[in-house]
Length: 193
Image (tube, helix red, strand yellow):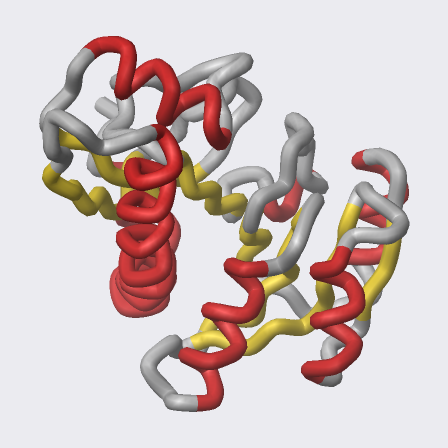
């Protein structure tokens, strides 16, 4: 069972999903601590409601100081909107989700509705999400799991976002379970030569 630190910047919808799946025993993980770079993030209120230690920390150094007080196997970026630099002991243990099928529509500046707008503008018929390990470059670490969604010609940006978020709710827990099953090194080793 993986012990997670969850980093977020907003409403905590992904934290809701994790909590529900942990309670239902379909996510083989435990939330040890929740940290937000936004002081009044709704996700912190939700974390407290669920009984998770919840903190505001404005920068990487502050976040890492908090994390060192907890027994953590992985750090999960759940709508965390800053480039994160983990402590060296966890440098290969940071997991992120991106709202496209990487390597399409990813990298610095591509997040949230910006991604969905670019997908719509290009006329894509498929989108989805990618769960991957994070490194020092946005959306470049080893891919753990991807899930696609079909798009219709008349899908609005909001409809695309809803379809992709529904896929994220399935894909993120699945990816975490795969990391628990195979171990972190498996995913890094399969891309390194």
